[in-house]
Length: 110
Ligand code: 5GP
Ligand code: ZN
Image (cartoon, rainbow, N blue to C red):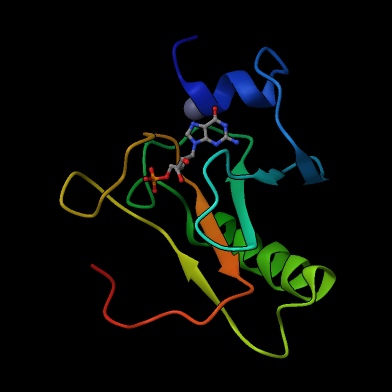
């Protein structure tokens, strides 16, 4: 298995888990861009959002909303990001949803 996030799911690489169920795993980003920076990933491998069924993506968003409340960033606001492909800045080719919050953010991003 050469997918980094599949290896995290398998427990071969440690992660700072914040949520897990039969469908998804959520853990803190190793290089946080904000006080809250969590990655929500499906346990089934999809290279990107392009390959994933809509219900999987919807489920990931639903979990992200719950984690936003749990992290206390729901009131002030947060960002959900799915980087896709090279120009989209996707560095890990296993679908992941970034939950980023806890500081003011600018739009558009760099
Ligand atoms: P991408 O750029 O593909 O949208 O996001 C990949 C994210 O995965 C980056 O924010 C990066 O910091 C994070 N990341 C890369 N390797 C690891 C790791 O081994 N553990 C954790 N927790 N995060 C990682
Ligand atoms: Zn994978």
